[in-house]
Image (spheres, rainbow, N blue to C red):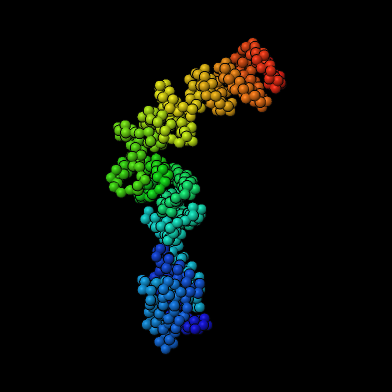
Length: 524
């Protein structure tokens, strides 16, 4: 049979086709992932000409069509009996039956318009869901959009996933309620729900992809943080109570039952409980649920979560009991908890945590922590130390553990204690550059105790001279100029002129150095 024959058959039975397509429209729901996949595959088969008319009996009004799909199934249509069957034996209607109807319908109507109307029906359903103003309805909106965009995907390129994710966000935001008191909750609720629904697609085995996903998650966490702050500043309506309860469940599931990137999951979980769920009773209930949890992802460290809730509930005895079992390899976790206590103004908890951390810092910094992270960690911990009252012995314990990685914060600690000579001695013991000395408070020492810098400048300048090149001689003269300023500020002019005279005499054979000293005009 030719295509003309197919067209004639379609026009002959137009009423039958229109009726059948209307029945499919009522029967199928593209918001349902199974129906959506069924329609999508059937449309693909019809549009790519994979359905062929095999036989037509004009007397009995029976058609037989073959579909170029797995197994080459045959679809039989009995117009008089109003029945359809397919040899694939899948649930009816199968994609082959639907593809056969789509193929015939194309001759009497617009398949594209029919498909658009079917999708619009889904859009209307989503709008109706949104108008329900219930957590369950909003969750369904997110789930439907995720199914539509991610259904049947197993692995996705990280760049592609981000593109799909942003598109899903835009689709979800189309249903944002117009009322301000609802819109902020809708955005927050759907944002964390979307992230949770998409989480399983972020698993990867390559370091490059992992780094990309971590950056992506951190960006989403920043957005969530802003949404939480915005929602927290709004007056809480009684009608929002069910959404708060549902959010707690969503966030709980996100932490305990998703897998991978636990630190990032815990950070997002903490954002909610730190800034949004602040009622004591809610926190007590959540802690009980966490302790009663029997099944959760392998990467979950519940001890850290328990500690966070004990801090929020100001349960000092429980926190101290956990601190007594601290080991050096857990110091990063406790540093995060100390930061948490500091952010939320739990001063006593902060002091208790830090006091228990100090004895473990030496092993942690020098044996457990990779060298490239040591300086930044020491700076971070030092900022916490400055928030509490510590004895000088405690400070010394910390800075001994920090070693060379603690020179900068220790320098500022010495300046704060007006221990300027010790500051200078420290930097003579660990010589560095002028730029690093300025980071360590050089200008403060120059202002407050300039004479303390004279031996240090002398040592730095001689280190340059010993390199025996004109470039190093020039650098030595730059340092001597600073030493000249310090001498003048300390009112040691006579000392300085004697010092320069001695320099010239000591290095009279180094002509290039003599020339640079002359150019430098070092005498006062």
